[in-house]
Amino acid sequence: MKQKTKKLSANYMDMVFVLNKDLPWSQKENGIVEIQMENKGFFNAVAQKFFKRPRFSRISLDKYGSKLWLCIDGKNTVMQLVEAMENAFPSEKDKMINRVIQFLATLESNRFIKKSH
Image 1 (tube, rainbow, N blue to C red):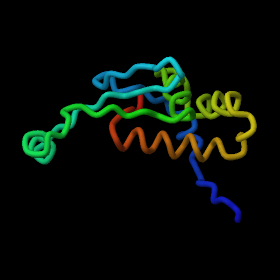
Image 2 (cartoon, one colour):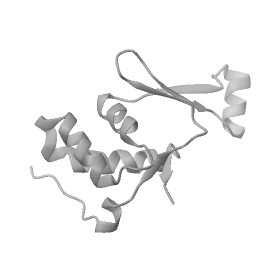
Image 3 (spheres, rainbow, N blue to C red):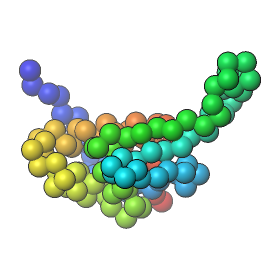
């Protein structure tokens, strides 16, 4: 089965992202990045009070997400991020552009990163 490749504008490949400075994160000994996120809002408050849900969640990224996260520095363009990931995972070079684009979209929609201005 042939994978669909998204058509991206050249402008997107020149885009630069920055990490959300309000989200604390750390890197574990095994290299995995863990992001701490506060569970806010009415439903989270109810869940915390009545169901003993935690106020903070820790989100562990996989090896790809961790590597990409560490490359997002407010300077690297999307194209440079793709190149860094291809160099880090050469056996998966053919899938890397789609993986990076999808992961950036997920990070952005969850407000973990934002476009640099």
